[in-house]
Structure formats: C-alpha cells, structure tokens
Amino acid sequence: MDTVPANGEGAGSQSPVRYQLTPERIEELTPLLARFGLTPREGLWPRFNRALIHRSYRTEAGLDEDNERLEFLGDSVIGLAATEFILRQQPLSDEGSLSKLRATLVSRALLGEMGRQLGLGPLLLLGAGESRTGGRDRISILGSALEAICGALYLTYGWHEVRPALEAVVLRPAMESHAESGLVDFKSQLQEWTQKYHQQVPIYRVVSEGGPEHQKSFRMRVYLQDRLLGEGTGPRKKTAENDAAQDAISRLMDEGEHP
Image 1 (cartoon, rainbow, N blue to C red):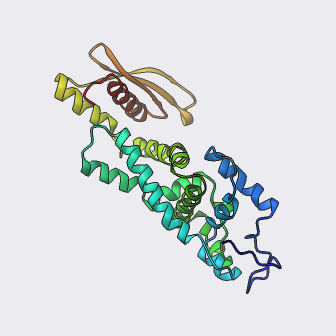
Image 2 (image 1 turned 30 degrees about the horizontal axis):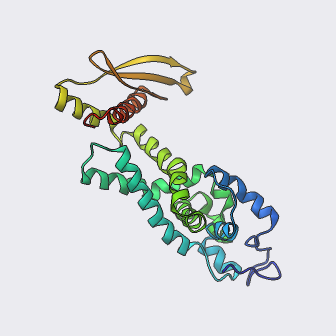
Image 3 (image 1 turned 90 degrees about the vertical axis):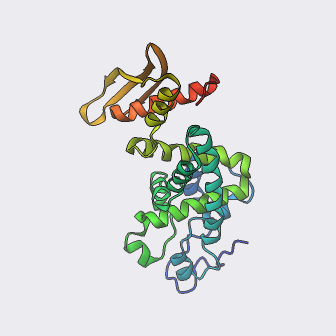
C-alpha cells in the first residue's frame, strides 16, 4: 500500500515531498505511460510513481518503500519478454548465442540507455545528494528505474498487454541499437543459410541514398542471384545491410524456407 505524508513533507525533509500523487505529478507521468501505448487503469499511478523513487529519496523523505521491489519483479518480466522476442528474431541462432544476446538486452547498461531515451531522468525522485552528483543521468539508476516501471506495468496490466508494449518500446529499439553496432549480426546469419543451402553468398545493392552528410539515410536490397530476399534502411550502409538481412530472414520464414 502506498503511504503519503499527510503534511506533504517527509521526515527530515525541508521541501514538499513529490511522492504525493497530485494532479501535477500525474500530468508529469502521463506522457511516459503514453510511450508504452497504454491508458490509465485503477491502481496504476501509485505503482508508476513508486517505480521512480530511488532509495536515497525514500531515506530523506521518510517513506516506507522505494522502487527496489518493483525493480526485482521487472527484472524477471523483461527477461521473459526478451526471451520470447529473441526466439522469434533469431531463428538461426543456437542456445549459446541466444543466451548471450538475452544477457545483452537485459543488461543494466542497455536498459539504462533505454531509460535515458524514454526520459526517465527528469521524472526520478532522488535524494538531494544523489541528484547533485548526477544521479538523473546515471545508467545504473536509469536501468533500475526502467525495470521497476516494467514491474509496475505488469502488476497493473498483466502479461498479455505488457509483453507487446515492452517489445515495441524497449526490446525492439535495443535490438536495433545492437544491430547498428554489429552485436546482432543478421548478415552473418543470412550468409550462413545461403552458403549451407545454396552454396552462394547474398549480394547487397544500394537502392537509394539521401539526406545531408550528418544525417544520411541508405536503402539497401539483398539478393540471392537475381532473387530479391529483403530490403532495409539505416543511417549507414552497414546498418541498412543488416536491416535488409533481418527482413530477408523474416520473409524466408514466412515462405516456409529453412531460416
């Protein structure tokens, strides 16, 4: 149960405690909920707000609870969502490769970066000292907060509504980020398949290139001889090629071929 100091101040605090679910606080949190494509439901806001309470704030405000229990739950929720997601996205990978990718997707470093992109920093409730020393931009704190957010969403909406939301907002962007860095190498997976079953390597061709130098956009197609396998886009040729390879694998699966 969420507790709120009756006088708006926590023990040892000299300023109003933003833990109170005022209309202004709910207004602050609403855009974050909208990012997940969800609408408010009974019991959401106290959990959602608690997910952003760092232990340093709990101590200063004299609260009974911070976001650590929700973080504990959210860690498992994200782990299961990531497992389902990569099983669909990595049809050619063995168990070892899948385990490595899952470990990367649920790492605190990556979740922290996703939390930063979602704008969690300004919404965090931090103690004064933690805030002064850059806590709002600290990857570990942002990652923990994102896990707690996922735990709060799971308790409110259940698995069937939360899973697609996490996939769209957290896991797919994380996968794309790693595809750009080459950590998710769809090109190698596709080439492995073409060499094994067709004794050939795929060929990548630039379809179009545009945008200013600092914001280029490439569109690539991948072929097996004259057969179009897939198409992709990206800010660099390598990224666009990887995207095209991922599209090719998805199409081949839909057509019932080996990938």
